Amino acid sequence: MQIEEIEKLIQAGMKTELVRVKGDGRHFTAVVVSPEFGNKSRIDRQRLVFTTLNEALAENRLHAITIKTYTSEEWRQTDKE
Image (cartoon, rainbow, N blue to C red; front, side, top):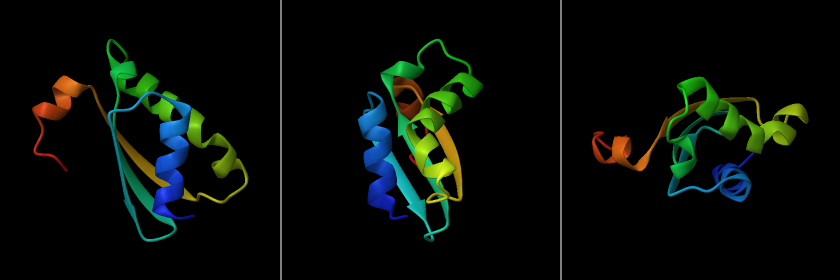
């Protein structure tokens, strides 16, 4: 699966301010900034993102992904991974 495909799936499945995916074609890391994360636990945020990727994961088009989630405020306070 290509990086751009993963970014598009996440963007199509939820409201995002930023989606940045890096990877080697098999293992990926995604940074997602979304207003939907406000007042949600880290686990609930992960679930939201994984929901957008369920089909790709089930079909084994996407093998492994690590997801880092931020609200806009949290993102402004990070070192911008």
